[in-house]
Amino acid sequence: MSFLSLKRLRAWRPFPEKKAESSRIAQRQDYSPPSKDTLSAISDLSQAVKNNPDAVEIYLALGNLYRSQGELERAIQMRHNLIVRPNIKSEFKARALFELGLDYRRSGFLERARKAFEQSREFIGEDPALLEELALLAAADHHYEQAAALYHTLNKPVPEAHYLVQKAKQCWSQKRISACRSWLNRAVRVYPGAVEAWAEKMILAYEDADWGQFAASFQKGLKKVDSELHFLLLEALIRHLYRFRGSQDHFKPTLEPEAGRALLQIISRQPPDMLLTYYAAWMYAKLGNQEEAVSSLQTCCGMEPGFWPARAELLALQMEEQTLLPEFRQHLEQLVNWARQTKKFLCTKCGLTLEQIFFVCPKCRSWHSISFLKGLKR
Image (cartoon, rainbow, N blue to C red):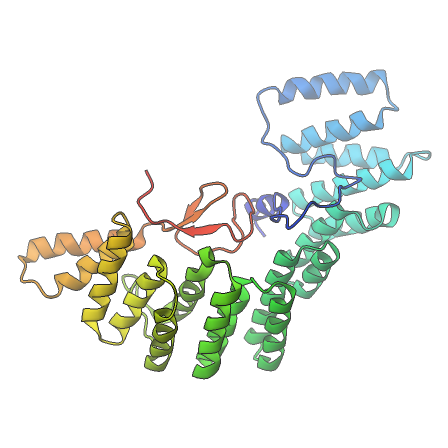
């Protein structure tokens, strides 16, 4: 695992479902990037430690500053100096072990980090911050069932359901289809709005050519999932179908006619929704109904004039019916391909834009904060 991946994993914080129980060992739940005053603070705290060697809080703060500067060896040494003190209180020893685990994680020594967290757990018990760090380590090692169990203890159903889905996908890769279905069912029981679970249920039914179950999963997903995330049910399916596409085939994966007709029938019964209409246009195109595809894309543009994905696809479809100079056609094709490759997903919490879908933002670690970028970001 790369240092950058570890850094992002360290910063991971799930979107809270409710006010969380406060931690007794983590004095802060996130870590700001070091400022220009960090070195001065380190110097002042180092002098304070010399003047008062028994000031455990200062030792802990100084170690955190070293870690923020990337001086992990010095941070680790400071934790060890605290841990081996003969008369240190159990609370401070637990905190020192917890911080040592974070240092080891940042250094890439995940097994040492786990050992330090487990030792801290012996002193402090089921501390929320500690359990979350253990959950992150479990997920990093692909122990998804363990990660889900820890989030269950933390009463955080969104990440719990997510890792149950990861466990289901793991079973699917091992061709344990029955177990895969069981984990997906468990995920939607834990958190009915788990869009990734409903999407995987659709994909599993699609691969089995079980069109009744496929349609039922889509319909139930629309009822249970937040309306702002409905598009993910279809986008995840399309991403699954991209496996054999070419580099320019952004709008062209194959769709089984039975699946397309089932989806369109359900979408037709939904309240007006621009994104569902956009995906309906794609389905009509796959079914060879160019007229309905164009009509759906025009409806999208009427709902939101600045919705550039619909305009790009509308241009691509209408371009096929026009007699154009070769050079002009080439320019238009390049423009459409550029539009298709533009980042189109946005995190509503931090503003990050990505081309790939995500269920937890890789930057701010918010859960289910994805949105379709409907206009070009300036």
